[in-house]
Image 1 (tube, rainbow, N blue to C red):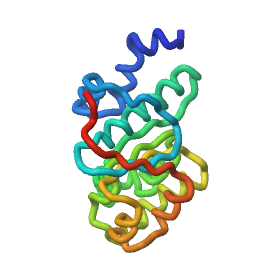
Image 2 (cartoon, helix red, strand yellow):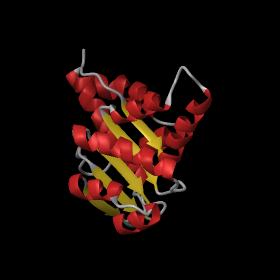
Image 3 (tube, rainbow, N blue to C red):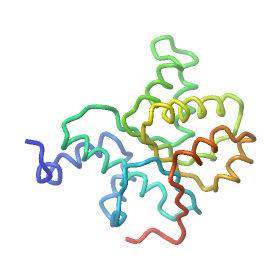
Image 4 (cartoon, rainbow, N blue to C red):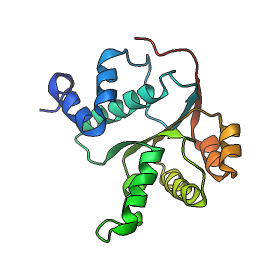
Length: 183
């Protein structure tokens, strides 16, 4: 039976184990969630250690709870931008899993968290990849949470292009995190 009791007693941990790395799982169990969690497009930026990644993980876990309780399907994905780029580069020497497969995977996910935007070197390949994923999700109205150490102005300068940041400005709530995450 899909209810909140079942979710809290065992389904939450099983689902979370399939989405997050062990460190994030540990942190999710040891810190308090945000007071309010909204399932919306969100750009969270701030200094290292302010809890951007954890807040994004709590939001994705809330999306997982909604998917579970409503018995719907769809991928819930959490990845760092550098990991995403490596996943695509790994397809260069494979025929069974292509760049388009990776782009579709992230573009079509029910809910996506892109962690650490701006930590990658902004090559043309990286820019095109990020633009395609963010734009496809923007066009399809799919919720996305993006974390970064940079505000949007700095991010546009780092990327040398404002196509990505303009989509974020139009459709995302912008949240600046300060201070340390409360335990």
